[in-house]
Length: 320
Image 1 (cartoon, rainbow, N blue to C red):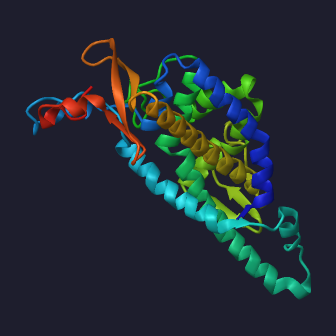
Image 2: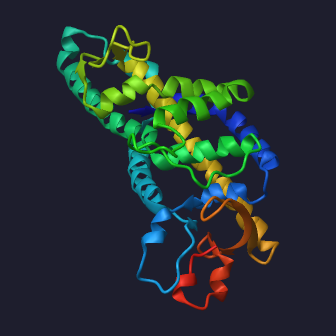
Image 3: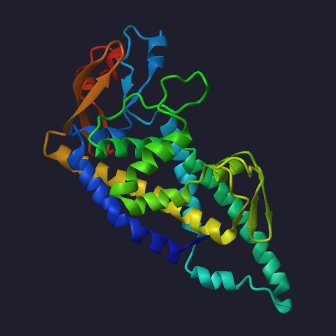
């Protein structure tokens, strides 16, 4: 269950920093089209080298949802549906009072506890959808890079196996070291929300179903006394509310920033013949930097390679 008063409180605490973060990212990006690439999901797809059904090879540097984008859209719909039907106008402290046991309310409290446990387990699924989500992690990673004045990372990938030698890092490494720690000095409120919301032990416990619920407590079965990163034995439901609300606020703030980026570039396109230049930093087939135009479709609020308008063969569609 989500509580309006907690969401409002946490949003008010970090939204001004997110606004400042986005404004500074616009100013700090090393190419004016890089933030557009975050929204349009620029990515490197080496699979194009294996495609044999086209007369000419496509460029492996593409824009569009790709696999992680389609996955994101599915999860976004699920998360949005849960938020829309689960936000309570009842203040959280009043809700907690309903659990104070009296003999007269024993049956009501038992029913309430069962409903709360079911809600928490559904929220655990959403917690995984967010903190395991490739697109969610990638977007924050790219935004942090651009804010620091670095190029858009076309070759972003997450370690999926021990054979991934060129990946950026594991999910945990990227979230903690390359995203969360980036915010620490410049944006402390955002850093605090990340630190409270993302707990790798909790995430792993949920992912491997290594937990139990007894009363209003989540008991983690992956506690390891000798492991400094596995020191949580129990998470109370009240603590879970705090963790989950920070997660949802970070998720909704990312969505808000991406919507603002979309509106900015859509407006900019109307002043520039619907065109926007982007930079492609290639390593395939050799290291080089290229500049290409994206064209905006106002009615769909999306973008495509302007070169597609001049393509002579189907194989040229989508090339850079």
